[in-house]
Image: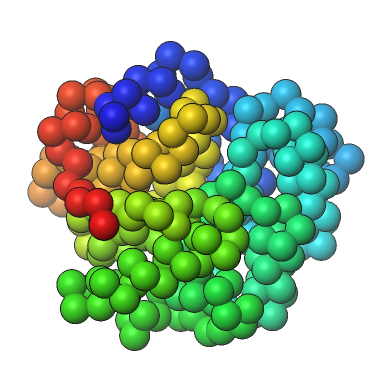
Length: 273
């Protein structure tokens, strides 16, 4: 099933509208291209309704907010929902500031995203309506571990039911759930945390996957997580002496570009709870 999700992206070449942060915008565009989709970026309020209308889905990332981009997020989000297009929210740094937290909570309540993808601290902030986080990274105290896995699965399932969204929590152990079934995914490398934007890239890829697999969004979201984690493993295995995080970033994107359905099926490490 995961391999089929990958093939559907390559066949349909979904056009994805991204309102993302300017730290990672180029990498997000390249990651979407690498997975087989087509990216377009726009956050100007007078532009976004037209842009999102011609796309298949919308990726909203709150990593570098300003008042213009916030307005654009709501204009685009409401247009996407009006058209029945899937919307993904990446609540980067929710809990780090009042503006980020309130904006993310408003998007959840007013737009109702199809998928919410973030780290565990960001998701806990949204579930509580308020919270704290370590900048844009998850707080170590919140980390999903083998010891906390069952309670974390129960938590994300409840949050998915409450929001009527697919929820993807990414970290050392990734959780992807629709409230009933939860994929527990163990792909990836800790070194991915040394690259700015791997989460942002995943959100772009995941949006392409859910657009290309509208009848299997849970599996599509899980497939995207496995693709990114497996690409991190493959990219790391190809690192050469003297290379660092910049080279690693490129090797991850290359691994996404070259990944086959067979490679994904054989390399994906997951169980369902």
